[in-house]
Image 1: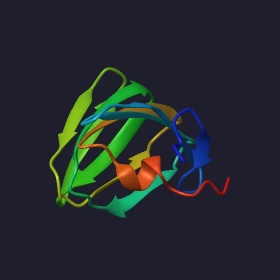
Image 2 (image 1 turned 30 degrees about the vertical axis):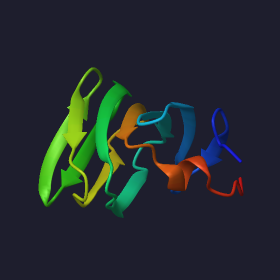
Image 3 (image 1 turned 180 degrees about the horizontal axis):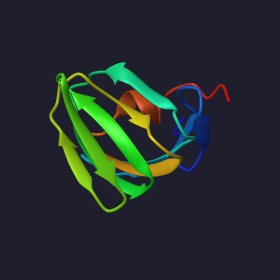
Image 4 (image 1 turned 45 degrees about the horizontal axis):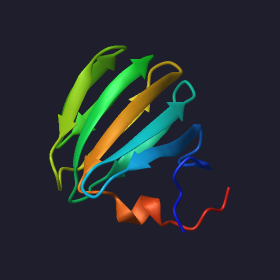
Length: 109
């Protein structure tokens, strides 16, 4: 089962939708309410994040980064990272290789 095009709840105050996935690259849109957090985690995938709307504080490997609309951030594979929406906002995330764990996750929302 593929989750492409399906909105699912992520952490409290955040929901995501996989927009598309190719053989080696995947793109996902994530909407956050103000103060919602993307919990700290790591994965082997390289991630590029583009802030479409709002302001976010990211912590990557213990270093803080603030993203505003129009900013991008590269997250290396295996780096522990998380974010907090300083205001309601939208992120566009790309992953390589494809996040099979998200693409094939059981939909519960």
